[in-house]
Image (cartoon, rainbow, N blue to C red; front, side, top):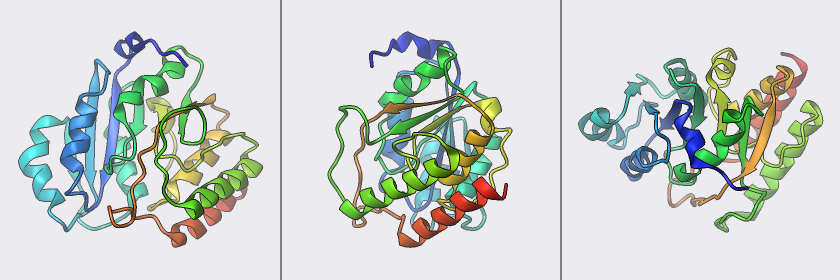
Length: 239
């Protein structure tokens, strides 16, 4: 899909970066986000009580470079960090950016395009559609992602290809109107269920994916998969 980068001069983008023990990559990801082709950019970093030196890097190096750095006083999980960061956003559009270099901020214009053109309220960046580069990593993670996406779709009646993607972009009034209840990785199926129930216009665009291994710091595990199943059922049937 051809995207006119000039659309990114029309709206202010808030980027929420939740991080936990990302000392090896936090400086790189903030630098990459700052170089994103978006004219009006607000960067909000939320540290979820890192213990590997990330907090010290944020305080000494990152705070002068971004709009806000917010610190949790105990480890609460990715969903909790996003809840904190999203509440502080002031942009027209909000996007989630993991701190682990798996997703490329140069693709923000692709995600923003349907929103700026008033076709979408929510945009998912899919790792499983389009011809963008995709690092070959774990087979069973792919199977798990596709199973969770299928299960979620059965409840929401959406036809997403990648429900578990990090790259979810929202109009700010949409995401700030939704109560986020999940503290960990259950955020993904929870927010999918709630935007589906809200009747918002949802688009999906293909993105690249530079996945990392557990040796490189990947944190999600099989327990999060079981929690995702619980979240799919809970937020589609009981919320």
